[in-house]
Length: 116
Ligand SMILES: [Zn+2]
Image (tube, rainbow, N blue to C red; front, side):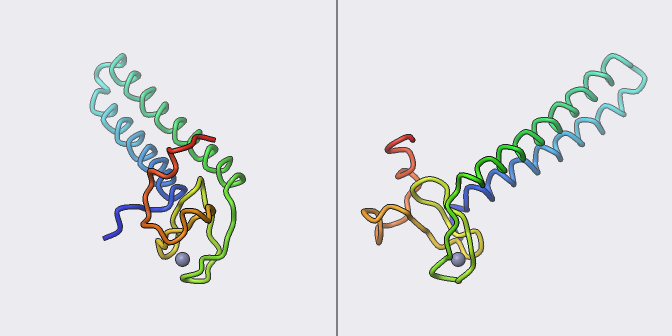
């Protein structure tokens, strides 16, 4: 199916997986309850992942304020564009703010051509 997904959705998935990793690491720590040092290390690691996820969620919030809100021409729902090209969050329709790229095949590389 579609190789690409909306950037905000991608980061959100990443933040969610960080929470899961954090919980799994803390859960592993419980198995080492006979060794307080190991258990503490695992608990701290798990906590770090959870904090990392919070930071990523905060970052999404920052990105969302910078993203341009548009109405998707394909499904008619409001979505957000990050960078020069992005995808509709609802139907994965490729969207661009750059008229020179309009009609061209979707390519995430366009985002890296010019860093801004
Ligand atoms: Zn759409």
